[in-house]
Length: 457
Image (tube, rainbow, N blue to C red; front, side):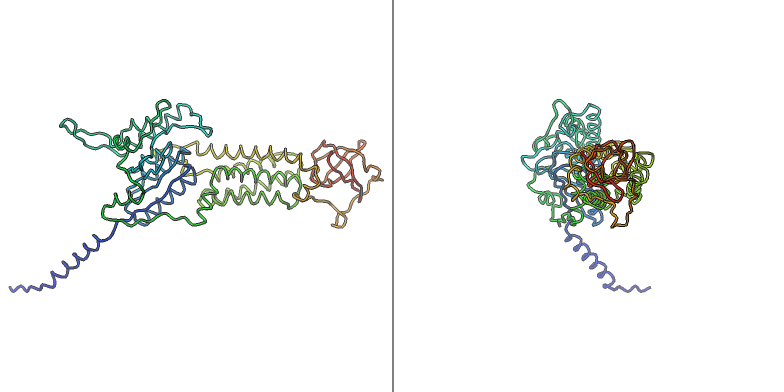
């Protein structure tokens, strides 16, 4: 049998293989760079989760986190830690200045740590908003997280006195000591390198990227759209509290002086600023926003149709508080990576809404007592008068002009209309501006169309 040999059948595949290898060797690694700076809270958590997802989508080879923080909310740090540990891409953190408290937890979760000379890592003791050390059960929880995060990096084999032995790559006991209430430790770059908590020093995140890639790399920095930047800024707990107070206070003032005025506009603006960022990031659902407006409707029905504060008003207020709280609850914080429920992720939003609502009501009630008697407030909160020119017809009840200048008492709530009591008889009356509660002392300023007009004393 004759076998024919054709060189091109062999040379062509070999040539294609060489070209493929050459192209593969020339493609630089891709490094995704993102920043986590300032307080660790919901905005930082959202930004970090967005960055990790984007790096996975673009199939990056490494993620480098440029970190500088004194700490923040433990639940937000725990969420970032979980996202890093579950990320399929190798992660490295560059500590430019500080990785304290929650920042230390995030750093230890990364595959490698690089520090700038003069930076530090540690001091992870749990404190409250005033800087006071929390009870030991909180410290114990934090120590457990720090230890388990350090242990997640496994062990390595080292030679000691000629014998090979396994040791933790990151000693869990050192991570736990970062949380001690007495003798808490922070590590300098040199100390961190000696204890296995730092792979080396660098002057910039770009230098870290070069150390990781070796043969050059392409760096892609996280870029947020203006929408994301505004939404993340609005997620600040301080701003969220102010928006809540604006909503509650605006509603209160508007109910005190019905009509489309500044209080109602302020409440609407507050609601938009409150719900918008939560809706953008999938925290506020349609049903939660719907419940909010249903609650407002029930409160309005209670005020205008059934004066007092019965089941309708209570239900409406409960729906408003529930919807505002539910919209703020982050499902990513509720579910712990190791299982179980993070109840603080539920309690904190509820507490924030409740405290903000009570503060807004207290300020509003105090402010109303000072502002409503003043005529100039009617420019801010539109007053509503029932005039004959607008189609209203009064019912004469004898000669009431003689009561002008006398004092009386509100027999019902006047928002702005109601009844006053004079000599045991009730008369239709309207506030000149503002409103009055039942029992408030009033002065009659004029009479007309079968109605008395009053101001508060």
